[in-house]
Length: 142
Figure (cartoon, rainbow, N blue to C red):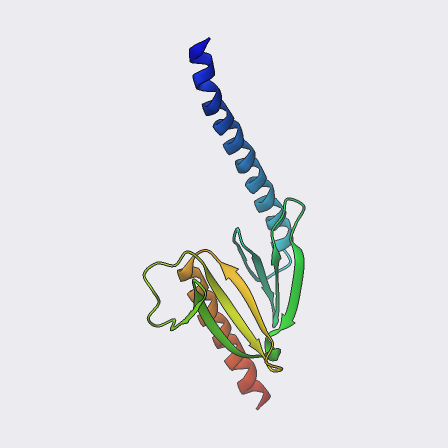
């Protein structure tokens, strides 16, 4: 009986891990359905992001699909910056490690929108890609 009581906490941990895994799997499956409408998309535990043409849409992943969705046009963006652990950093010289990063979109009316990421290198890739897209839009409008 004593051995059974010793194994009970371990069983509880395994049940908790199984539940967390199932929950994350359902989020990813809901993201896959949502992402089909975009040309380029990313899934992260903090946020989902999709781009279709000049439109960016992002939100919070849930088991039922992304919620709190926000959409904007890249033509509204005046500046793109990178944050790592809450500090603005140079994408050419990023820190070696960052627990959390964010892509910051500053709009023409000086309102900022942050899209969180867990992977700093993925954030930098999106930053560089979106900068090229914004520059192309600005060149085409001039």
